[in-house]
Image (tube, rainbow over all chains, first blue to last red; front, side, top):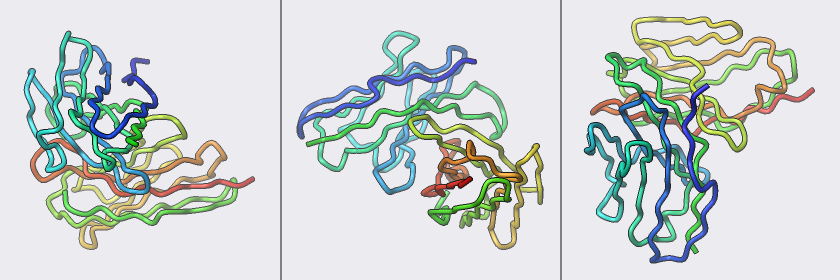
Length: 116
Length: 111
């Protein structure tokens, strides 16, 4: 069964460093998402991406964040200058283009980011 | 969108039924979802319900929706140890397709 994959599974970085989290969505999907979950808190939406542009973003997704689909298969989240509070589990999700809200978002296993 | 609230923990014995509850505040939510997260894995969609339905049954899963009270529940019949996981309730954000999650309920099934 097709699945969303994410790399790396864990990343440790120093505050101020740039990190790139990578996702490979399901191949025939056209909508892509990043969510994050800070330990002990709810899963929060960051950004959605369609047709090579951001379609929706939350207040969390400020200028330190960017997303890209560099090669038609990968979908990346870049954090330019990490802060301690960026430590979280980051989930990628993808969805086929379809009408109706019932169309499932398929989630990857997540990347656990720790900023020291 | 807005707030989605869940109790954080539930422990049941194998073979019993589990009921996980969720409340939401956005009365315009058209679809409500239950996702399951097993250790080390992503979020797996279990089931969803459209807001004009009161109940949806899918094998061992029963979803009940009380739209007046903005209350959603997930009942798992004959709970097995493999059902131990975190269960997330979610609705849609006000603006589009982004999902708005609760904090998740950790279900522990004991033999």
